[in-house]
Length: 313
Image (cartoon, rainbow, N blue to C red; front, side):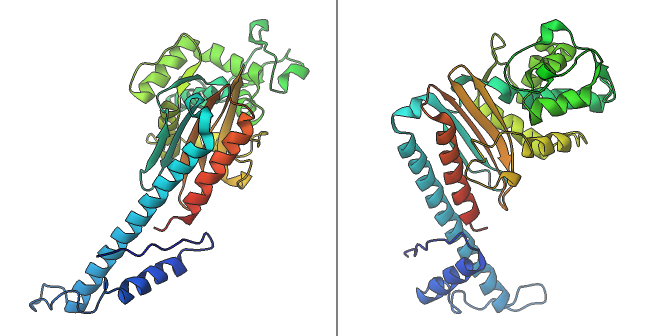
């Protein structure tokens, strides 16, 4: 029995579902004579209920098949777009509701750059929740925490202690390197990395600031699902939505729905985040030596966004 493929409009879902039903009825896939009448008894479904149940299952299977065909087409589109750059990019896309994925070089190692500030804050907030560090504590700046690059503390007086929550906010909002170094000094670098490994369930290379797209997505799943009901996680997500940087994942999609964190180091250009469409998803993209990498990440993000909002539930 053939399946009639229908092009989905991003404008809405109801017309699509109605069109599938109408097409399926016209082709004989959904018919009032699909199922013979059931034997009547007090506990059984009526003939009409059995028929509707079967028709709903057929419709669900048809929608799932079409969504999978579209997912495969999306993966092919991304690979074609990357072309010769494909070996220099790591992508992990995860649909939160369906669990469907697209993974390209998901276990390839990249330098994380400032994307590490997401998991750093997750570790910090875990310690807040457990009472191991007070969220009202302030930290004193020391010269070994100085680092050029992104941030706003470089131009401020650092004589007075700074609230650790302010440092956390700055590390995401402004990607502040000094704030980050002050927090990592408090956590202890190796302790932080060990706690990140515990979250991942496996050891990682601590010799440099390494990450894979798959590991980053696994961490973002935990941030989204918040299995320990950490009340501080929502603050992290909010800060990721209102960060200063909008030139990658949210370059071509609505900024207000993207909770993300960019990261750069040398020729590594990255962005990772949770995108809160009606069908929310996680996207981690790492690149090395890719020309115009920010634009490349922006286009990949737009392809996935367009696919995600066109899906039928």
